[in-house]
Length: 366
Image 1 (spheres, rainbow, N blue to C red):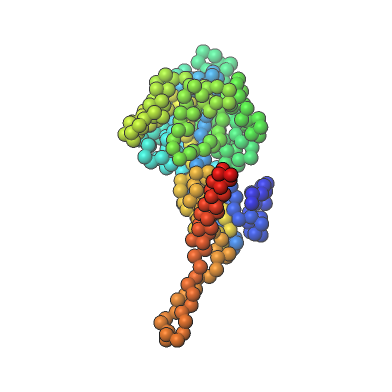
Image 2: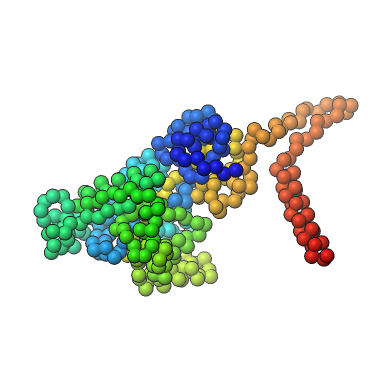
């Protein structure tokens, strides 16, 4: 049964009272200890979730259309600080558009975004001519002292992680003379602003989502996807990137695919349509009686982690195993073995499928 329960506190209460077993998304960092300490609930953790938080740019906006500004921003980003503020430490930094934490097979060190270096960021902007000519702490555009390097950044109102990460980024960019106004926006406003043409945003910070294979790079950065409601919401157009992405998607061998993936990652650090920030570590609340879930990247409850859906069960609803006693005289009958309910359930499903198939064949013969 799926039930909509609005608000993290309400969902935790529902789990504690037994009205719900778990929830779709991970806990906010502030609620992890609350769930751990509750006698009825537990927290499933240990892997990164599929939710990749990024800082994205509208490449048609003056200032953001200058890769030197985007590169300076990349140097100004302190991922550890952002994770500390937005997730209270429950996060994994992502240094590539195909991050090692989720796609170790395709990750390349050559496609790694730069480490945090405020001095380097300021040097890039100084050399590019973005100077604070009036001394108010905000840089101005080259040759235009009346135009400040100032942008608004959209964050998702219902995602506390997005809101807090946006606030952290604004503070970090202030150190290099870029003023950011954080716009806390409902998804009914934010998604059309990002994806519907003509796009109406400057910067955004939120999570997207990974699948089993890193084809997200093709959708996000190929020029054919710079369309109305296309995933290339940045407006990136690069023939070299398009070729690399096509090679990656069409590769017929693992080695060819890995080579193309490396090229995509390297080009992403040069073009910088968006900056990967972190993966939210999976912190799923669940009632303690639910056991036998599996841990895969993305967490135990995702659209492609079928193992948990197949094998998780409620331990309180299963009969207790009967312990086999020590050998007894022949006259005393041995206790019956415990019922393997998982096997019985599996056989029942198979029988149902076979029955439906036979019925279908008989119907066709008529």
